[in-house]
Amino acid sequence: MKPLNLVLLWHMHQPDYRDHETGEFVLPWVYLHAIKDYTDMAHHLEQHPRVKAIVNFVPILLDQIEDYAHQFTQKKIRDPLLRLLAIPDLNRITVNERLAILNSCFQSNHATMLKPYPPYQHLRDLYDMLKGHGDKDLIYVSGQYLADLLTWYHLAWMGESVRRSHEIVVKLMTQGKNFSYADRLQLFNLIGKLIQELIPRYRELAAKGQIELSTTPHFHPLAPLLIDFSSARDSLPDVTLPSNAIYPGGRERVTFHVKTAINSHKQRFHMQPAGIWPAEGAMSKALLDIFMELDCQWSASGEGVLINSLHKSYPDQSLPDRSNYLYRPYRVSDEKKGIFCFFRDDKLSDMIGFEYSKWFGRDAAENFVHTLEKIHQEVQAVTYPIVSVILDGENAWESYPYNGYYFLTDLYDLLENHSFIQTTTYRDYIVNLTYTQAETKILPALAAGSWVYGTFSTWIGDHDKNLAWDLLCAAKQSYDLVMKSGRLTDEEKLLAEQQLASCESSDWFWWFGDYNSPQTVASFDQLFRKNLANLYRLLKLPVPAIVLEPISRGGRYTGVIETMRRSS
Image (cartoon, rainbow, N blue to C red; front, side):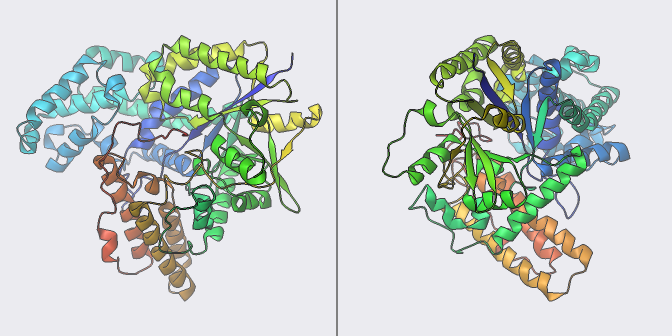
């Protein structure tokens, strides 16, 4: 029987949360996802050695994981929340540190990460009672309350595989309260161990050939927009663009992000990445041209981009059935080189991202496999069919009971033992294409877009997002002038370039707008403007007053998983 190839691509990303002026981490999400999601995802693969997958690590995430590992080695912690976990006497901390603990240690999915644990829920009930009398009463909570809250927050963020393999986690969760400094220190040391072991675990999985490690342009920029704002009009002809016509030197900046990503990948994993997952699956022909220049074999995006591209390529033809165009490789070429392009099954990817968390794990896994079996029946005309399931490898799991442990265990069990569904990687699939002599479709025209709605509307087009782009353009114009002036040393130029790269991340633009919660928008708004201010200081220029004013306030709608978007 002809096999059905399945690629599972898990995209691991967090933006740069460091204040490069102080070296401090402003938000804790890198180390929290490291001990919860990146550890669990490695565990599931280690327990299922016949399941293949692609794990896409954004270099700026790896930079930060390594930063945390070094902090533990050097015993100098630059993350305020992590540092507070290991402070001996919490009765002696400042009022601001008390408020930082209270403001941070309930940030999670309460349905799956707080309510299942009565002692943690009790801490929340006490907080709500005190807060009902006004914020000023919160400064009177005891050091023991803060110790228990810090401990439970980190216990709740522990991966399910960690809970099942480390006795200290079970002991503390059973104890439930009155955690001592020694208890907190044990937990702190376990966090350091998990982080320091993380990258070597994935390196070993890659060395065994079980996973393919791919990369993303270094700081996760929305590359097609950096190259050309007007690419947004491929999918949204009437979109309002920023006041600036272009981002100055955008193509050069994207090339920088791609080259540094490839170099960091070589340094960490001792091999050239075969493929590049563009940030947000945001693809354009101009971006693929850069990938081809740098000998990239494959890239991928969302189903909406393929549909728009087929309409652009064949404007007088209606689309055939989905099974006739989605589950096959495509080739995009220039005069000298070509690149394979794959497009994910948005429906299956979104089922994992948004729906299966509401199901029993086994039922969800069986439904996923049954859907693949139906696809197999529908693609008999395709010589070497491939189904791509691509989504965040960290953000979905907090909506699942037990961090998705039972769903992923059952899913990998079923896939590992299936008679005709074979998990593979794009690198291996491309090698096998030559042996099967399977047809590869040429894609005559590529419509720029992303894996969210097939458009760039999540990052450009409304007032707040466009204002952020204009602030970035102004900073880049100043950067160009100063870099050419000769007033900076080589070391100062390098620091400015790194800071600019952080400002170019797609994440800041994701959060601007009125459909995210005010608290989250405020955090990312402040961090983006802090990055811009740091850039001006590194350029030895005054910080413009407008950079000190909030860009966006959020607030209209908070009933979504804010870190992810459905495809449509």
